[in-house]
Image (tube, rainbow, N blue to C red; front, side, top):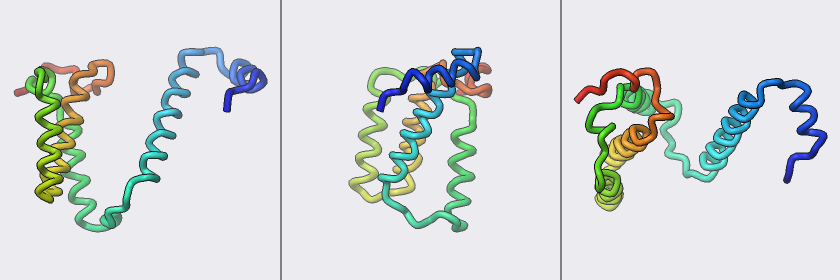
Length: 127
């Protein structure tokens, strides 16, 4: 459904900084896309369990680590290799390796997009 002129006028009367408005709109769009994807995904049944908390802690620590030189220097074939690794993990039923292969792919994709880097990624990358 398209936005109406009245809605645009209401936004403009309450906000002088159009860049901030655009950023909020983009963030809202991202959150809505995430919510839609989450609603469509199957439930694993580990929420609110010790296994969930332990897995989350390990994934958070790995995600929050600064990007490495290897991740920042992703070469041709690196993404394809990780996608094939994910495929192999699914085919072999190795859920643990699947989760961490997906994390490695996500970090390489993050490294490929410097405009998304976090504070810890701005420092000299580590090997």
